[in-house]
Image (cartoon, rainbow, N blue to C red; front, side, top):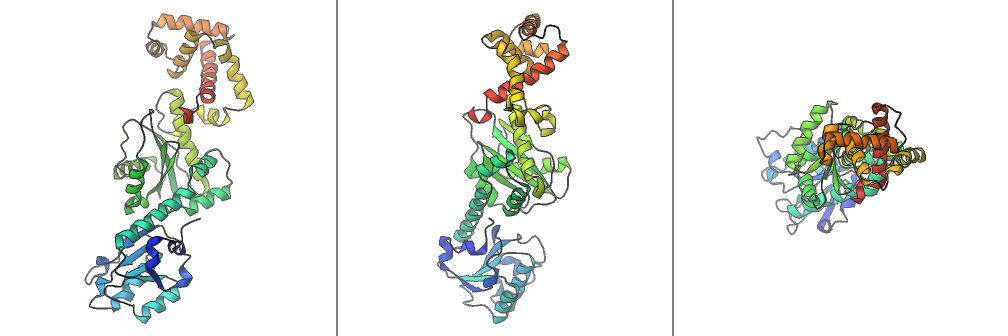
Length: 390
């Protein structure tokens, strides 16, 4: 479930924070934390709607109201209009707030807290940010992500998950799965998550979650153009200090977030699996061809039997077996297959003829042979070399 203001009361730093007013607003959702001071000083235009994140918990020293306490009510009204979740002030300039502020807080069900000098802004911000991160991690856990990828969640469950994460989705969403291409390389998840949760700009555009030694970056936008999503992804990767060198980057199509979040995750992860299986980089789900039906059906009995009819006769014949693997991964290109096998093209042609004879395809055309062989090899690789067991 989404983090609420009342949940923050369980944090260590909140043990010294007192509720002043607005108790009926403790169920307000919290997605981030922020500090308010200079935005409300005299002669500063604070009407910018992006000054504070929606659903943020805002803290302040009330320094801006030092010489005019009427500015406190103005500031609280603005924070409420911005859609923030709650407000807390440090008792360093004011020990209490005007009665009209309390009345506004009660009327609008907008919680206001106060805390003493012994508490530091940094500690409060850190604990709230960490709590939001943990809440997102619980919602988008590896188990829930796997269940979405496997299609085990109902439409209602997917909708509930999409509504519960801290990211406020726009009309469209694209999922990108990033994972190291080789063993022995890992993404510094701690650094990535830290960079994400301290960046106000990033939290309005995407959410990140770890899965299977990789990272899902779910980007949202009011526009459905794929190029816009690519530009946002580049910006996000730069802001997160995510080095894409040696990384597989696999994208989904553009979909609606609340109805199709599971489809987005599935498409980007399947794109990664297709890339690993074929030994090549598929940039997006649209490019993966037959993998779109092979991956979800790889364990189906009819697929297994089809693959076994072609692959089992080649077992124990290492030269032919290796050649057919290289042939499929080379897209049926004789030259590329010869290079991969370090032999002459005529040698590959001879081996392919032997393969056709061995699997009972001697009378079939080269086109028919490659079509069936490519499907059989890919099913075999998907079943015998799971990505998660590399």
